[in-house]
Length: 303
Length: 140
Image 1 (cartoon, rainbow over the protein chains, first blue to last red):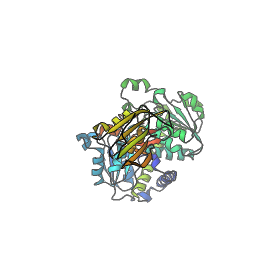
Image 2 (image 1 turned 135 degrees about the vertical axis):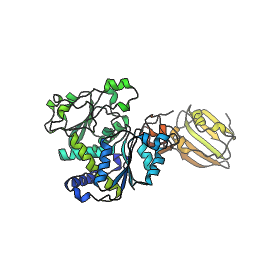
Image 3 (image 1 turned 90 degrees about the horizontal axis):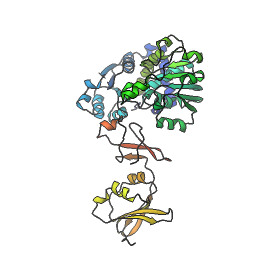
Image 4 (image 1 turned 30 degrees about the horizontal axis):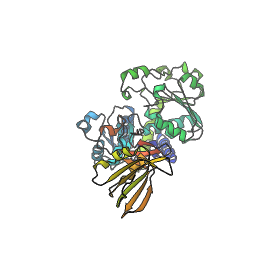
């Protein structure tokens, strides 16, 4: 039995296989319509989510399976103080696979240690979000036609931006990758991520200016400064508008730049950018469903 | 200075000078009934000075804790007055229940009964990280 807690749980070959399967599902959806018949996905979401939860649920439904679960901690036994491990053991009796989102870092790992069915980390606090990374990789490979040999700009909250941490871990495996970290000083990448980049000898630099970095980027990965990650509201207010992408700032960008964002956005990408052909963030949402279909099949061993 | 030889027990040798009391407290040696000797600033051929702890009983000694506290330590096991084993310690790959994660965002901060587990992330620098949240352990 396999779980997906961290993107590093998957080999590069497995990631590429998932991308291939997702592309095949897009081309031949009928072939996969019954793959998970009589299988149940439990979505255990202790924290609000639109995209990730609906993406998991629609992925399972399109595979012919069904879905149970909860979308806030208040409507589960967590409100009565039940531990994550006990919830995972209980849900293992009802479902075939779990997708868990939790505000505390490491909760899906705890669930995977107790569950008797596969557990997918659907985001744990500011820590990891491996299925968003799979989504990002599928999007980049479809838009750019490759996953290596490019300069990737990561912009915004790089400290608590869990999608950024997982994406760095995944892209670091490919040749010719270079990172430009664009963030305020207070929201730079955590030391453990920095240590991993240094260990892999990946070239990277840090800057405070999006405008300065723009001309060299092949991919620009924007993130939101997340209110829910701050203990102090004043810090959030001070930092929330650090970077706002506008058509003016894109003037110096490459013509084939790919702009990604894990969404939801607040105001860090102006809506005027949406019509720019370089804006890929809504394509990214669709990719999320297909890659999750491929992942569910892999973990349920129904390919 | 004369300290009686021990018959059955341990000689914890090559402790970094000045840190024996911290190890004594961490291992809870004050709760033992047997003789325990703490020797500070003994002369050493390897380093200028060292500390030594002698325990005159074969207690259940947690070598992982000792290795974490001071990987330079040597533990000699003494039986019937003779050293039967000499173990040079090193940083353990994992630590169970030795230190607590201080990250308020970690699941182990709200679910207090979860076992505290850390893995050795960087042997050279002696860095341990929480297995749940990857937070760096703070040395006490």
